[in-house]
Length: 113
Image (tube, rainbow, N blue to C red; front, side):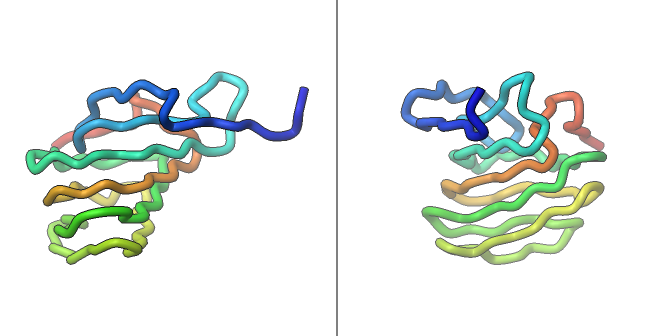
């Protein structure tokens, strides 16, 4: 077995998530390291948090803001934000971003107040 994994986002189906629609690379049972998502944000993104996941957002396109524990933080292309476990967050605006989840994304670790 190789010591690497290759993914092509144009081959990955988008799934609905609290932020809009996500294409999730490396979401497979034998990967315990991280997943990488390309997310298209909708304006009605839901505030949520994770108890175990750390997320790194890299804004690719658009402008808007992130709500992080109630604070509005403006973002633009190439803004990068580290979101620690427990931080209530959502993205607002028409944005496309890369989301790196450590450990790999698990839908059981999405929490809503």
